[in-house]
Image (cartoon, rainbow, N blue to C red; front, side, top):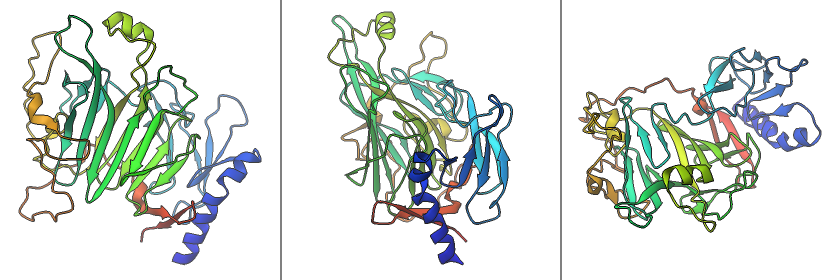
Length: 360
């Protein structure tokens, strides 16, 4: 039966492009979406993966009738054909005012709900999350207009380290921004990732521990690392009106493409650190002065890393592939229950396809 399950799942993935080309109902990894008969009605889907949800008919809630949304902070329909066999509302865009958000130049919303800025310096790397099993560095780009005492900075790329793996995502430099062009660059263990420009496109790491899904045709992705975290990432430019309002002095040769994001973490330890990570420590007391208009997180040197994929900042907690000490304190419980994509184990088939099997 396990072999049959694997065959059926490969067949589902293999005919995705065929169904789209023929104009048939849109096929996802685990369900077929059926367009509503009447415009404005909620979308419906049929679960196609073997398991307890097989054959279930799902209908999106009225509060989020479609799987797509263009409004930041709003929810879209998520069809769960893995665990609960139901359609629910789920954020599919980074909410820059939600927990775990990193946006703008750059502004953080911590796990404690406190908003603060972390300026840093251009062309430097900073550890934003450092835990025993996960380390995330951010590379800053920036500009310092004449007469300004510090750089304006933005997060241009992220380096994720877990076990013995490295996953990277960055916003490609561009002089002129075009929404129809994908500006994201992805790597896994120093190898470039080719993700087709189509909403719903998936890439799965060879070991099945990383899944990348396009949540827009270009420039928006959801990255999931098994049992550790998920993050919504979007590549965006500095718009002309932003440059005028904030005096960024952006010129025509560089629109300063950068990332904005929102993290959800699972199983962080109580010793987690980093610019953002420390705010998830139990009982964390923010050091930022909240009696001033702009709350700034200081101690920049403590978070400085020598490259995107080195965990050598002063506050590093990362153990890499080393086994965890059984005497370590209990991990922090997840802020929300994960939606358990990883009940299904996917891996590259070696011929450009994806093989998936349900975990038993």
